[in-house]
Image (cartoon, rainbow, N blue to C red):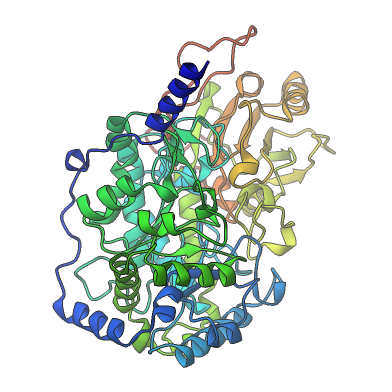
Length: 627
């Protein structure tokens, strides 16, 4: 019995220490040249800072648990607005209130430290999505379907500009996870299941957010700090958020690391550690990967930030004490509500030597390097910066036009029997389904509300899919009738049924299967319309592929629209011809991940995907409809 116990203990210990070979990992070329002048500035700042001021740079608090005045007593280096948190605890606070609070935090930090301003990070993951009035883009899974790096760079630049309007410095985007199992609730935050696609898309967004390195635009007045997340392997945890990636080192290196190599190669300045584990070791405590691979082998010289109290999951740690995470390579501990006690305990660990002085100096140097590269000390108060307070830029027509383009390019046509699409706009159109006039459903999670529960009137400016269809057909002389249940006052020429997932985010979006929860009602609606010999176009709103064999069979045409965001008119742009019969926009989207089949009746694994990676139909040659 004792022998068996010892064997189990030994096996667990071995599993807790997977071997990493940094020399076998990629080494990207440095994005930025060495800058002795910058390093001399950092040396000068470090020489003037007290241990408490240095420890403060390692802390990030949530604005819901800290006031600007607190910074006069606790010299923290950064703050964030967590999910659903906003100035005055009002998720609909005006952009001016965000800017005023940014000023107050900046002024307090400058009064407390040696000219080292606080940074403010936010989850601007598909536009500046916490701010009423900002442009809301499709979520990443749709942008992966679009496969348009130039568009992604433009989206990043627009997002950065709108973040700048509110005085913030930093976004926790993009997610560059490579998805293996679509049951994961963060699937829509990924660009797909192929490492090269994710790498290309993530790098383009980083360049849009930060500006291209080695140019004058890099981290200039119109740009913000980007974050590649979540390092590393969070897409390979069997569909479980914060789970364990059990892949071998080769797969982790060749698949999960590829997007990080690309992001480091274009100068990403921050990387966020994952809640997840690799072979049983929590990433927040994995020195071999955070330091040995990311920092030393890949040459990443920016800062590594932890996720929301992620350090507390490291063995032997809590939310208020975690020297092992700092020693592993976390440079900034995201401690939303635990920052006071964490500050005190971390300072004590520095003074005792539990956190070596060399590790403290390296972490603070990285934070200061990022702040100086972003020009924070000389930029002045957030409201004094070039684009601050330019409220006309939030959700501007030009920005919304790019979002609408992104919707068009992200749509994937899975079925088009008898070439039903493109539709004649002069038709009598029935628009049905619970997603037809539902901006909340279009946008999904991370849109004003963390879980995507904000009602339509809180997400503005916006256009529902129905509103876009109505505008297209009425302009051409047709008509559109909205009826979620599929009833109609006059027999339609065609029915467009819009349906799909309700909002979710992170682990709350994990599901045991890819079955569509409202399948029976939707299939019944589709079949009823087809039984009346009404051609049916199905439009699915989802953050991942779902088991839709029944819906596919019950429709003439089927479109995967992903989570297109606030510009629903982009769907109508592709579904309909123009008023003169031309095809203005073809389907360009291709599946960014394989579309699995439903499990067999006996629960067995189906053979092969329903649709492979890269699948997508199109209209082909653009031509006018015969008269």
